[in-house]
Image (cartoon, rainbow, N blue to C red; front, side, top):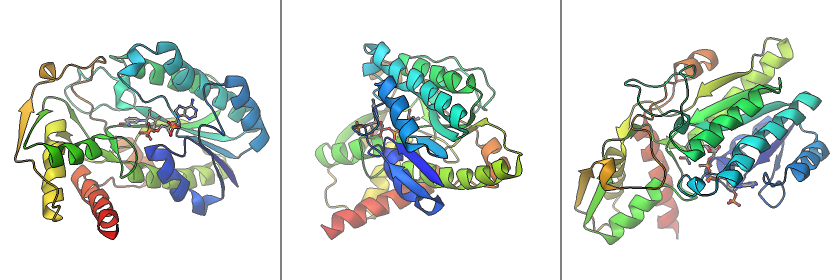
Length: 301
Ligand SMILES: NC(=O)c1ccc[n+]([C@@H]2O[C@H](COP(=O)([O-])OP(=O)(O)OC[C@H]3O[C@@H](n4cnc5c(N)ncnc54)[C@H](OP(=O)(O)O)[C@@H]3O)[C@@H](O)[C@H]2O)c1
């Protein structure tokens, strides 16, 4: 079985490059090999590889920049996934694609289920929602996995920003009125591998249904709670580099950004757990494991 992976240098893409390996021949591609902003080239490359499964981890993820780069965000996040799905439909491949909590406006009180009505509050969210729809209309076999607040040892993310800032500053001000579930890229990748394996069996038996699943850690916190846990774990792990003493909770209005963020980013994982027989770990348990990984790498240097 041949799996084509795009975006291999991203947080999720890098982890997928490892997690998918036992499932078949994985063609691991970066932006220079498969560029989602070149739709004709994308179509040609996908045809050339003729994979059984396409896993699209590439995306335009600059949430604030998207406010002024709408066309590029839509090209990469909406049109390109549509092309991937058209090619998957043509060849009978299965397409796995990632989406986001930002398809919702965050006004719901409880966690969002897959069937809740999306209403993105920013351009990035609009482009990702358009990508979901572009895939769904093709009639290809697909799995769309919505995740949230992704972090990893590699790449740019909140965890790494907090570790850097906590080493530089005694006092930090972090937003406390946005709630979500921080999710380790490795958890997303390993969950994808489980999902893919079962889905391939379902396809073989003729009882596969394309669907959308929320894939996040269990539990919830605010950015402030996430930051506190990061600094607590770093301290427990004996980090010598911590200047930070205080993390103040602040409201979103005191940290203005170009793109509006949902206040409630929680996604319920019930459908995922039930269909695939999985149990998603608590966000702080996964965070601890990721930070142990980072600490081990630092200590080895
Ligand atoms: N990050 C989050 O908090 C978050 C939250 C919810 C959902 N998601 C979704 O999860 C998925 C994975 O996100 P991530 O956090 O792993 O993103 P990431 O770390 O920003 O990685 C995105 C990857 O896409 C690649 N890319 C960008 N433009 C491209 C293009 N035109 N052609 C080919 N590749 C291109 C980037 O390449 P370079 O390395 O060359 O720049 C990068 O490797 C995405 O679908 C994202 O929308 C992310």
